[in-house]
Image (cartoon, rainbow, N blue to C red; front, top):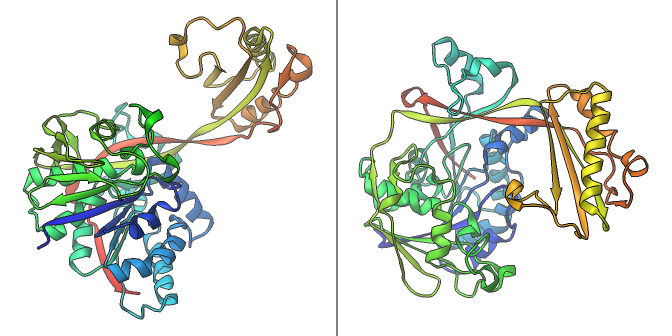
Length: 455
């Protein structure tokens, strides 16, 4: 058994730095590359793609990435865990198999897939059996939006990925698994941790939480002395250097930009944390209040002392549904009286919408340069602002009403206050609103499936 395992973060979301995974596998020693592609809204986007094209529905940029890094991964025995499969895990795996054959691996590469998270086809079965999948925030039953649902995926944990790794998979491709599980699975596999060793499950989970957002733990989006973070153009993504006892060090490749210190790790720890006493995952309930951090040298932070508790009897479900339409338009007003002009334009536009009989669920106005960031906390607007952007948006169930709104922005240029600019983008675009519905489902009725095959 190895004494330490180095798990490198390569993507914090679908659309993160394309070169980051390449730098992680080529920039220094790592054992695993973890690639996190999925956010809640991502699943609905992929579901729409698959509806248009049965071969779509996964993070397609994962495939050319594999073509670039697989030779190095195979040569250095770097294994990959990625939730790039989205809602078409098998399609994603087939594409990677094609890449492996193109590169001439000839059966030397084992691909593992994890499915069973997509429950779209089982929703009516669950609802008919009395599983209401109530919204965790509002308490409403899922039946109230049943006809508008676009995707429904259960958050699976680390153990199906562990199974794939135990069976020899060098690349494990999943759908909706927890971000933390992508890191925890390699640690369980390498160290032989037991499922009921809640402290170690929690330690691996926290390691995954720290690196799941990529460079956010190594200097990106960092509030503390951000002006002094070095070489952000070449920012190094974080690496969890884990030990069998559950402690680990967060670091990055030597010579890369950014900064790993106690502050940067703390900032990532509180990201999407929720209750610090109970960070609930499919693999454990981690207690953030037990986390100990210490400086372990330049760009090295040791994390230890983490405690955990047993899993809950439920799994979380991420559901997306259609919630109407929206459009947002902007105009920029120049000095003098920039704010007064923008405010007058907002009033005029709202009055015209009323005269047209248009009704919306919400009309939201922001004055960028005045209060768009801090809202009422911004205080009174400056009378001598050089420029103010009027940004106004509407949302509602009726697409035609939203489209009519989009035609009322441009006329303000000649029929409203003076000194307008910034309309080069043209008429606002009507967009469908995809809303998020979190729910819980009994753990025992979800059955992940693991397959391993040769590329």
